[in-house]
Image 1 (tube, each protein chain N blue to C red):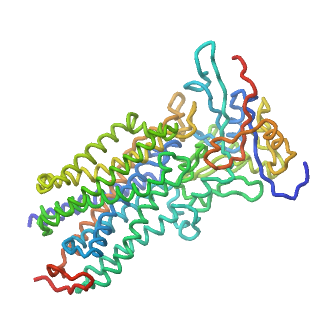
Image 2 (cartoon, helix red, strand yellow; image 1 turned 45 degrees about the horizontal axis):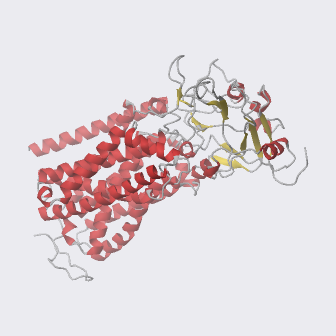
Image 3 (tube, rainbow over the protein chains, first blue to last red; image 1 turned 90 degrees about the vertical axis):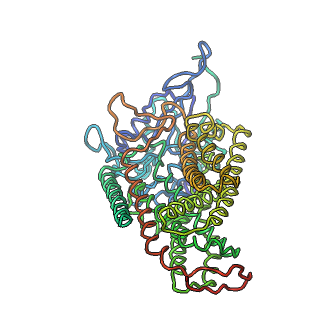
Length: 217
Length: 406
């Protein structure tokens, strides 16, 4: 790790060429963060036809890709701007978008404001199967909004988010975007990483690395 | 005697509906918002639609009264108390609709003590409170033994910009969101003001016609005629703004905006949009605009009712067009948000939403609260001896001396 005086800005690059669409990251995220039944912080969407794992086009010209989707930890986060209660905030260290669950009034303005639809609400009393807290962090109460934290509890121990370490295809690269030599900065630079819905001006700290070639299915 | 019985019966009905609404809210507090039809896709529903709608309904009174006061149009004076009463009651109802929408209503005070000032919701908190205070002060001034023209003029000068801001800021709650192309339009605030004028004035007309029918209020036909003409103008402006909005959306062909607009034109919202256009805009406009139709009280009442309901449809459409189509809409979609039995509906791509009985009951209870405020207000404030009758031609710029009613 290069020692830099600049403040850290955590970011992630998701390599769409490597993603298999296996949902391991999504399931591991649920376990790590004690996400209750009915909610997902991290999903793997199908870029293709009309349905999960359905390709686009007609045989033999089929196309199938995946789009892992969680909080984009925007630099100019719409959710932070609209929260009336200072519950959603941008943490100084790392520039992570977090929710203070004890402040959230449950108005769901942030959900309306998020262009990526990655925020979820605890509509009911959180239920878990099996019936105990399986996560590494405390579960959230009913009536508050929650979402991906970049596994902030792991970051603070010097570990990477669990979706990054669990990905069997090693499709996720995590690190400090302010450090030009970090693997994530190098990947974004060399592979021409793009931000989702860049025209919305939210400046996500999550980048997507596009496929370099079309491969036959 | 029958009047007294009917009055008490009406109060009993309102209190009963409020009781039902309160019970439903307790049920929702006990079980969470899972008892609503809301989901992670359509995360705002009936409560916020009603909030928008009642903020709009609050327009009619204050704006018309203040405008008439400043323009020296004293023929509207007999309506001023009722108009301000309706404004005040509507804004109370609107504010009340926020509470059941919150996951943690007991923390709502946090917005007051440590509000985050970039949030349009905080601006709305402030402006709605201001608006309510203005309505109360106005009512107090109007029911003094002697009305002070100067005080009323000052209040009019304050209340007009505040009224414009109430609707603009409510529009900006939605219009400043870059995530929702159908809302994210500079035209949204003007559109909210024009819709507010339509629904607010139409509500005033409906209530006036009902009270006149019940012989609780005396209003000349000429006054109603002037209000009807004003309605025609407001509906025309509102319809024009909506046309400009929809035309821009479909002509530019930007995918997200176009898709959300097409939901209205020939998608799942078409059954709401076309009745809105026909019954909420075209028909009432014709009735209000054509003197032969406008002069018939039955038609006037029908047109006002249609205009009030038309704007309700419009609020539903504004909410659902944006909420139904998330920007990132790919299989399998967003989670519904509850524990679902295997095989049940878990993933949602397109938002579908229908309010549950809990939402309907709470909404009915809050509307009954508003009706109760209006009923009591009519009895104890509006029908107090008037101080009004004005000289036929007051000189402009000179204070008009109020004299007691004969």
